[in-house]
View 1 (cartoon, rainbow, N blue to C red):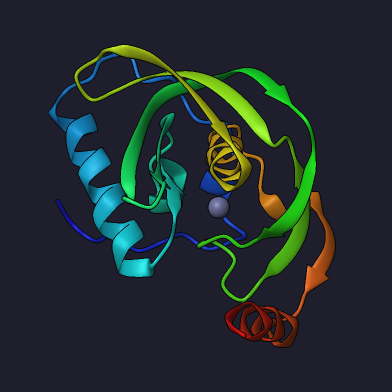
View 2 (view 1 turned 180 degrees about the vertical axis):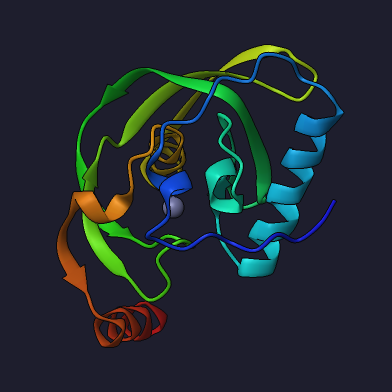
Length: 164
Ligand SMILES: [Zn+2]
């Protein structure tokens, strides 16, 4: 378990599709734990293995008010529905925020650390976070999907309005 350095764009590891995990062993468990420690250190809501320089299909996302951690090994998208535009950022693009359109419903299949296959449905921001991380595993970065860049001033104004 360790905090890793987050790889920033541009980097080959970020734009290369990741390899499937063939065996869930100690290395994969350690990778999941490193992803968690690094995500917490960098204050993210999700992180994918290539962001800590590991080209494997492993990612985690924080879910819900309880901030439960969803661990995804070899995730695949089974179904999506709807479309919604919202603001995204990415630990590999410090200071970049933009409006990205994504489905507002997703159903995925993935493996957990015990090697059990599970299905999960998510909506709204959680669907967005899951799809953002699965994109990372396919070497797809969110900057290619940004429809409009949002400045930090705009973001601050939005947060200020929300707090009023
Ligand atoms: Zn990202």
